Image 1 (cartoon, rainbow, N blue to C red):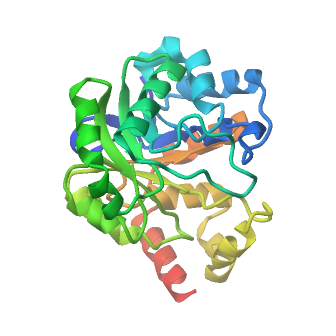
Image 2: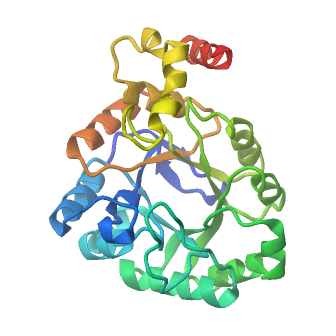
Length: 300
């Protein structure tokens, strides 16, 4: 039994560990967007995730070799984790050029083909959650009758729950539909734009899966992270961290959001994984520290 705290994933009834694993790091260099990864690295990190007690794994068709590695190395441990993937990703598309993203197609045929492919790749009979990728517009959902397609997959037992990886501005209308069991939403101390809508999604009974909870990479990562982390400097959050690393402080800030169900963090580094687990075991920030951090960030 894991001693990582759990929270209920909305109306699904799933008790998800407050720290989940984002498997995008397993996509590999061939995806055009990831770093090189060996099968040995994938084997080690996926089994380490489960050995540490994390029970929620999020992936996507778009994430290169991620789904195949999950099927290869932890399919025999399927009962130990809840599995979430995405749909709308174009099945059979070649990797997008570096820095670009493949189009997403929400026809019934492409969604169904994507789910079937995910099941084969991950050697499982069902996905616990399938999420619309890339926050499609309401016009797209209505034109393609997307919700009906997802509900059909649910009725067929191929997925247990349906969700959406959504962002402003479309997320407000997605929440209002009252059909999605789970929302994946970007949020961190340095990216607060979606703070209110996390409460809104939870108020509608949906589970909230937070991505980007430690911002977009460490300071100096060379991907625009420097600009994001400048807010951390301006708010002088180091003064509140009491010697903790910035990653630990950020992660504990994220899980302090009272409407959060779980936050997915990806890594290939066993030491980083262990540090993330240790951080969430400390729990949310003390209420006064959380309030002061928010005050400083607002002022910054």
